[in-house]
Amino acid sequence: MYEHRSQPLLPGHLFLRRVVWHILVALTVISGSLFIGVAGYHFTEGLSWLDSLLNASMILGGMGPVNELHTSGGKVFASFYSLFSGIVFLVTAGILLAPVVHRFLHRLHLDGEEK
Image (cartoon, rainbow, N blue to C red; front, side, top):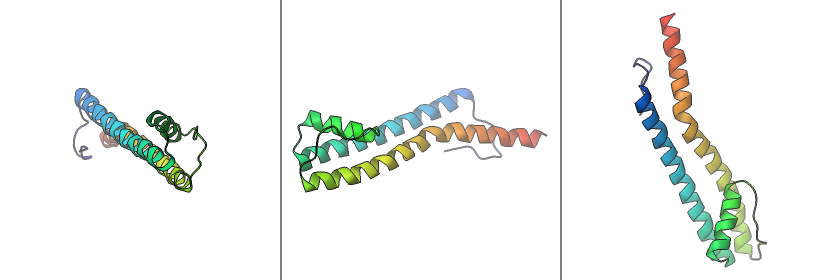
């Protein structure tokens, strides 16, 4: 997927395509995670779909839940979903930063060879 250090730097238009692909993958990961949260809040707490979306969005965004949790299942789900959301944040950041960091390091390596 990425060029080897012995290969030349990827042209700008292909690099842009790579960045867009990584953005789409990150959006897919976030959408899937949001779906898990919405379904979990809806089925464990009995919240409406809209309230479930709000709670899942707030947790996934790092803000915390909006509605008070009343059931043990909902509290357990919220605990695991919060931990899961933290990992999703790190993974998404890695997906988005990977092409930029790779290009930067590749350019440094190519500059080092020229000297």
